[in-house]
Image 1 (cartoon, chains in turn cyan, purple):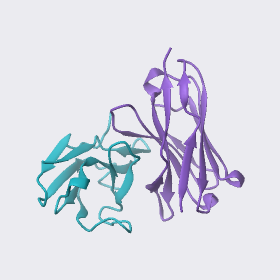
Image 2 (image 1 turned 90 degrees about the vertical axis):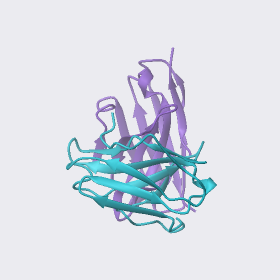
Image 3 (image 1 turned 180 degrees about the vertical axis):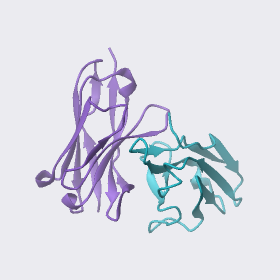
Image 4 (image 1 turned 45 degrees about the horizontal axis):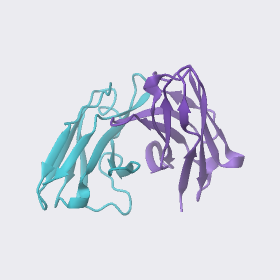
Length: 110
Length: 120
């Protein structure tokens, strides 16, 4: 059972802004940085945002991350059809010394 | 080009064993921390195990502790996962994922995965 909670789904029309939340605790998000991964249908996950708000090279600036206290968020602005995917937050958890993923959010482009 | 290629998956009976491999290329394998992450059919991602660049530090998820063993051979650019006492709930696609050089808990490259099915 994941200790990082995400909404199961989110949706928007092309061009809209969509925000995904990730709720944790003081032992994970509250004390360690958050990463976000994108998993397109039938493919392996891909690093989307690291260290709360940094984008790897090649990731469009439409994707942005933020963190506050024990929660984090991923925003997708200018939503595009190719953004339809599952999105997972993740962080190291000091107790019980494990890496934890969020429950995942499926983004649908209407 | 960084590549991680998993192999060794398949069908195994409950209680059985399986050894997964992950062949790395396109980077200096011995400098990087590596992880195993799994995904049960239709479910989310679950971190399984971590090994430091020289293999001196290892972590396991509670769900596999005592049953799975992670190891690496830097001379062969390979990572392994020995899985014993397999259970139905271990059925999943298993991915190897490279840790970023500056933060081993940022998985910057992933393999395509290998499917493990535990069933009688």
